[in-house]
Length: 302
Ligand code: SF4
Image 1 (cartoon, rainbow, N blue to C red):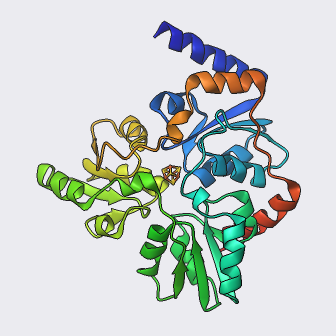
Image 2: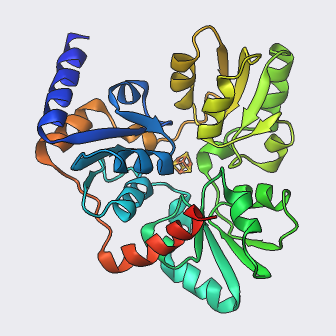
């Protein structure tokens, strides 16, 4: 405990010296969330950090999130305390595979979920988040839409709109661990609880939910009056934030196995090391950044 306190003090001291902000995704370890200036979803974190005068962002999340911060704030130094913290779903599409698919589907608008690399964003027409995906799809006037990389978010969106979409066969291995049986069993144990699941879940899980929300939406939903118990169908790290912000309410993970191992690579030790050494830095090359930013900006005006 003493070790942790000293470690935290050293991080906070160095953070001040470096004029840095610490950004923690909702899926980060509890102790990492607790030292962060902002906790949230990937886009929200970059947007909040951009409003500060910090020169350094320590991004406690995965690689594409740090890239998004670099796309939006090229003048900042963006640190990712462990370069192995990548997103397996984002890695399911590369520029090569995307270019090939685009060649097979001429006149297609490419919509990329924010969980994609900067290079893939640069090859896409418009970006989306889990919260605004339906709005983004409905804003498009072209007939053909290629949605990537998450087939399950894409499938969920397709049930909310009559637009025709070709879905990239990507998926989040962490959300795949949540099975319909988990929800059915927990509903019996907690009959009063609301079931809230992430749209990255498989359709059989989504079909059993009361609400389908991204992580930001889940955090807002939990604060509502009348919500006293919630079965949470997403990565378990969010439970820490939900409990902290809503004392007296009960949050039950849909599956204790829904852990993203890449998110958990970021530890307090690595945050300190990263601030000490000012490495590893994530910097999107300008040529890619400018193209990727068009896709992000197109989303922001929808
Ligand atoms: S939870 Fe899924 S989508 Fe999120 S970073 Fe992990 S693998 Fe990627």
